[in-house]
Length: 206
Image (cartoon, rainbow, N blue to C red; front, side, top):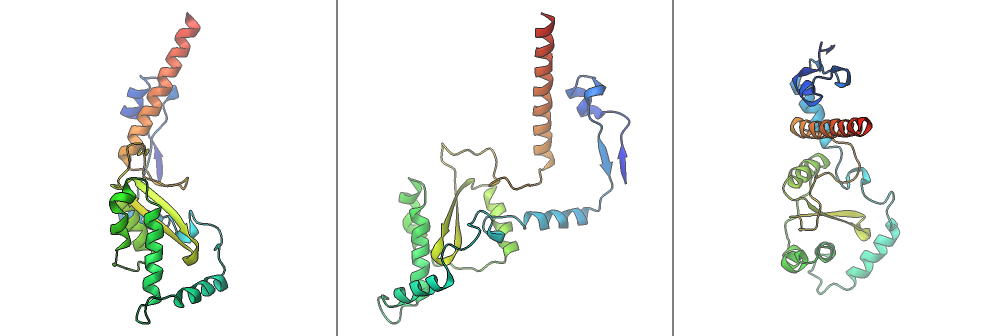
């Protein structure tokens, strides 16, 4: 059940300096916290780079036949019969990711990235949750499409000085705001609007 308050509320009254005609009415509704948490979790896990080809080409750039021909050629050039093809493919993909790192990070971490041996398959939900959790601290992101595997390589790192760090969301996909973020943005926007109106009024009266 939705209910409207009888007044603009303390926050709106303060921001709009008692001008109730321009203050929005607040609304409340009774929600099940467990249901809200479950729905929010489902939403956050539904959007991440690579999920449902988000931030990837709409279709693979190489056909299945082209990828198989490529694998056959690579298998013919293995250093020894005991070397798995998957090892060469993983090394090639990690080299591609390392070469795409920004200048400075490539020199400092490129070799380490190429030597990675840990390989952990994740469900899409686990991957999305891990990605969003990591993005809270590692706001620098490199997204590179690797056509031979039809894969989006997502590399997170600390931001450089020239990188924007205002937010941690990629692209224009919708997302939910925390109350703290909403409160800050609302207060800033409302204050700026009121200041502009006051300035326009003063200029008109001068």
